[in-house]
Image (cartoon, rainbow, N blue to C red; front, side, top):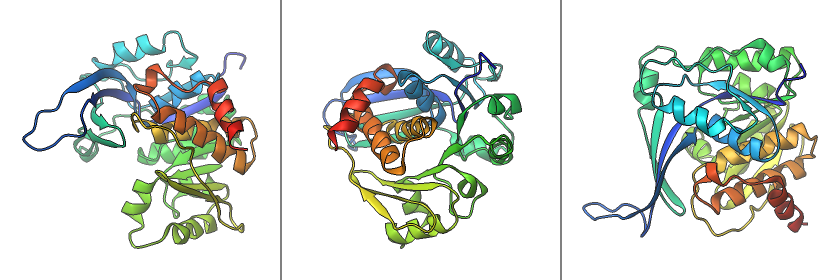
Length: 302
């Protein structure tokens, strides 16, 4: 137990090829100059682990199986960080799960083969280990991996480990039992077409044991609990360099807040400060927000 990590993360861990363009987003039949490009850890869980380490939190992560091309980069990147990779499967016999993201300020376009991977019907991710969860203080669970996702949540409940999740529907097991569910603008637009943010929020609150937060890009965030009024908060204003990893960083901020028993208002402000710093720089994995930076922005809002 002495060597246990404070936080357990389960979900998407992959290699991200990112391309920051110099002069606006791609246009058909026109040349675009690449200003910078990188191959670094990504995915909702991979990015959150990087940010939590930067905030001073020790992490054990598991999820996506890691293939031959992604493995050397991932191991090298986390070699000097408080991110424990010992539960992960590094024997995936192919290059591994990767995505490719083209970025120009507020606009980005991710590409990959996730639909193909999920349509195979084969499992390409780990089964959560009970000891990893029971020895942690808080967790975060991505909603992508079916029975294994639910198992991670069930093990958290069994051992009284509060967990954060993302984009989990109001009628899902993951949402109902989460300490915090962060619902993105993309999720609300895809899953709740024709409904206002307030209508979606009330639906989410009515089915939640914990805190629901709806993020809306540059618009006001909504948050609240079952039986409470809906509260709103504006995000911090910064000059945007890249939005890649903004939501994953917000999730990491919520995990940190949960670990440190912050109030709901403090949680949303802290996570928003983390995300604001993240979008002001590129690439995020090499420049994650530090605790001092986040606290400085957090306090500036009062």
